Length: 321
Image (cartoon, rainbow, N blue to C red; front, side):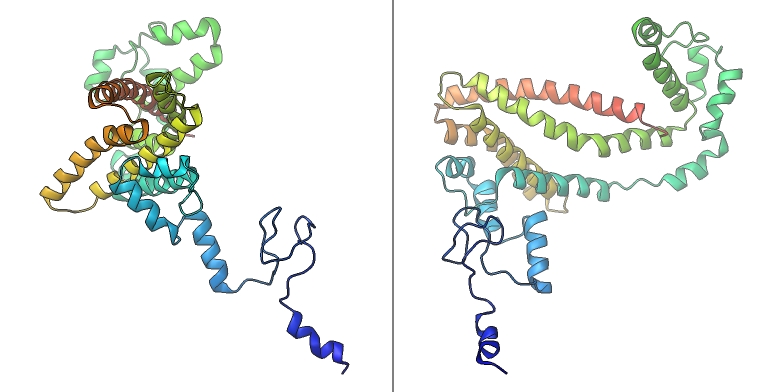
């Protein structure tokens, strides 16, 4: 065998002259242009699992430093990021998404829905086919009589002509009016237990999206409250990601069994966290921080209530599909 072939294994893991990803000239373990490793080899099972968990669950060494600042030093994580100390911490959006997914997954595990048992208890009359039977037989019944039968009456059903909302929609959105009418009849055919399932499933499905879409509004409220501070909208959005991630983590802790004293202390910390973080990040006085916090909570609470109304509505409109 030639000397060249004997020498090949010794250089199998040597850095190549060019990056395999962007072809830039490299001289170390990482490409200075794109950041990819220069020495590549098929990953072992351990390396693959570490990369998978680290990428999708954010379970890596810097997670602990991130959680320490997030949970016990309000606003410190935001300040670190603004100052440019970013590599040592989990990225804000990644942190938020990880805790959000875990939070809603824990809610669903803690409150399972048994669809099979409800349908068995309700019997065949609760199936959507009953909607068509009711269209032919029960549409003319008055709303009070239908309510006495345990049905949910969303409109004053008077043979189809008394539904004010449906009638109004017919003028400019016929398809929407028909959809709304169909869903009303579908829900009226269900038992109380099945209607609870509809609302709960709608919450599980749409609430994570609603919370994510509320983040820009939370940041916008902060922007308006701190006009003249010189801070950009992106800084307010960064702060919103961190405080909402904290809320998800603490709510998960509150769902776990714990002594009453510990739960009371957790609720106090939850209430005190946001104004403390606002004062540390925005450096305002106590009175200025207090009134801004009250205004922020009032505006955001109303926004959340409206968002969850739309979440329930979306769940109702998609029920049975």
